Amino acid sequence: MTYPTPRSRKEDDMNDRVFAQLKPVELDGLTEDAYLRRRSDDLARAFQTPRSPQRSRRLTMPRLPFLITAATAAAGIAAAVIVVPGLVSGDPAPGAPTAAVVSRGSQDSQEPQTVDARSFLLAAAVTAAREPAGSGRYWYTRERVIQQVTVDEAKYTARVKTLVREWEARKKELKGKPAELEAADKEMEKKVGELKASPPKVSYAATAAYTEDSWHAREKGDSNRTVGNQDVKITFGSPEDREKWKEEGSPVLREDKPSTSDLDLPLVLSIDNPTLTLQSLAGLPTDKEGLERRLRSLYGKSSARDRVDFAGYLPQTSLDLLRAPLTPGTRSALFKVLAEQPGITSQGEVTDALGRTGVALTSRFTSDGDSFEFRLIFDEKSAKLLEYSTTKEGESSPLTRVAYQDTGWVDRLGERPQD
Image (cartoon, rainbow, N blue to C red; front, top):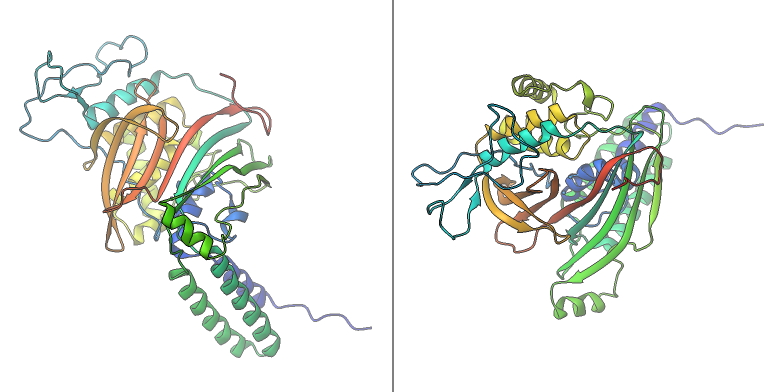
């Protein structure tokens, strides 16, 4: 009786590496951002056929840094300072800072007033510190994701299948020849890299929108759950774009059947910081100086250090934290850290993808020679994050836009927070 020859550990490692790489470079960021959300859709979905260019969330091409640093008002502007209505919950404590806005006119002026970014963040710190601490077994998030469709899924999938067939055939040919197998592995990695870097693109403008629910377990050992592809809607840039899509066979741009995935492994909150988990949040400092020291320490150990300086690292990590269940003290400290960083401007009141009004803070950054604008929208009263988006310079529509419809602690999978 004969038994199949077991594969070597080296062959298994090669397989894992090759298949884990089969997704376009420009989607790695979205997949990472989604590791929080889908978060993500998650690991399993991360390696499925790519859709479009964001876990976030939140977005790399490679991963686009989310700049949410704060800046002081431009020097030389004669400004009248007034309290931002509704931002600070309750009566301010003695000596507590108050929110401020910047206006080019007098306090009696009827002209629109723009919230100063730094002052808004400091006021947000006061509000965050006064919010009650929540508790529960799972951290629930519902978000509406809107992103451009850029990758031709049908063509990409066909090329992936071709690469897989080639790899399987080569493995059989080189069975028992480790040196040649290793060389073939390197050649396959090269082909995979080329496909990821230059995936086939669609020839029309289209946007996919969908809703996703996620439950992240507070304790190790409990399952995490994501329910994605809900209420999928495809929007074309123009009637001509829709016609081009039809001419190419009306390919599926995003699956419209809700899918549920459970994952027993603990999820990290930040791809750049694998030690940041739901379980570790309670141990983060609650004072500005202590939190900044911790963030700088994390940066020193982060893979992000090879591609961005601390100023580029802080915004993305801050975004990862802002959508997580931070303690009131840590959330307040984070706003204070951001308030001292340069680079952000305020767009005043805007409307998010769900029709809610909030204060928008924006910043610009570069990636692979291209310039982008990153925008965060906060609720003016609660200072909660409503939405983030990333837009390439020269384009009118964001590459990715994620609106947070609901977040909060619950005690069971499938449960939603009570109002």
